Amino acid sequence: MQLKASELTVRVCSDDERGAYCFRCPECRRAVAKDASRRIVDLLVSSGVRMQVWRLPAELHESHNGTPFVPDDLLDFHLFLQEDGWFDRLAEFVDRPTS
Image 1: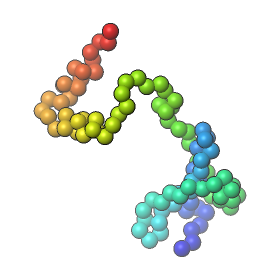
Image 2 (image 1 turned 90 degrees about the horizontal axis):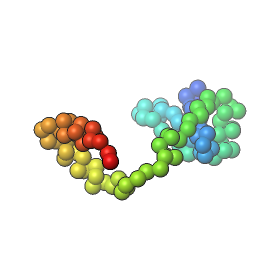
Image 3 (image 1 turned 120 degrees about the vertical axis):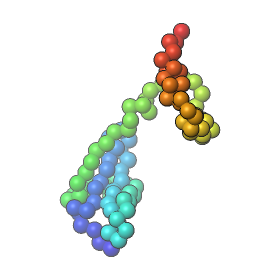
Image 4 (image 1 turned 60 degrees about the vertical axis):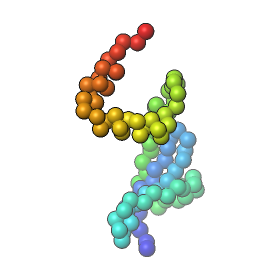
């Protein structure tokens, strides 16, 4: 299987310079992403592949208080959403003044 440069996209993170290339599989049309070294990124871009630069989310650099989020928290939240009146209960929790 050969792909044209126009069928590929190179993505580079400006924060840590990690690179990847992305394309749609010509057979199944699924999105495919593969890690790429700096050398591969340079080679692809010099061959005409378009490059997208992206940044890590700002939230990664924020300080966080409290206990870490764990899979059980997600399960609890899922069960919470199954209850009647969940939205009103959630709004009450969020709107509580902090001391």
